Amino acid sequence: MTEKQKYIGAFLDGYFSDKNIDYGFKYFSILEEATIKAEKKWEKYKKFKNK
Image 1 (cartoon, rainbow, N blue to C red):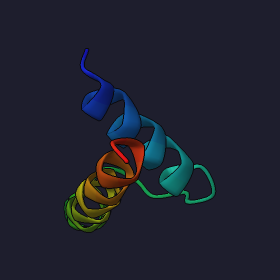
Image 2 (image 1 turned 180 degrees about the horizontal axis):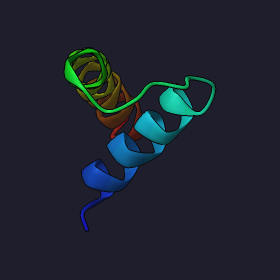
Image 3 (image 1 turned 180 degrees about the vertical axis):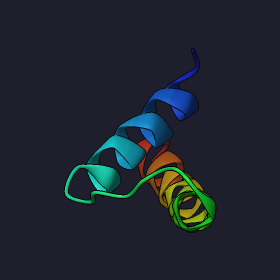
């Protein structure tokens, strides 16, 4: 597992920790949005880390 995968996985765990959503279209829609947010945060983290 790469560092990026670990970062995004941790982000998604935190994002969904307070949500009680059943699997279905709504879950996958929210998952898609959260993954996009995680990708953007990863890019910022990567730039900050490399300074």
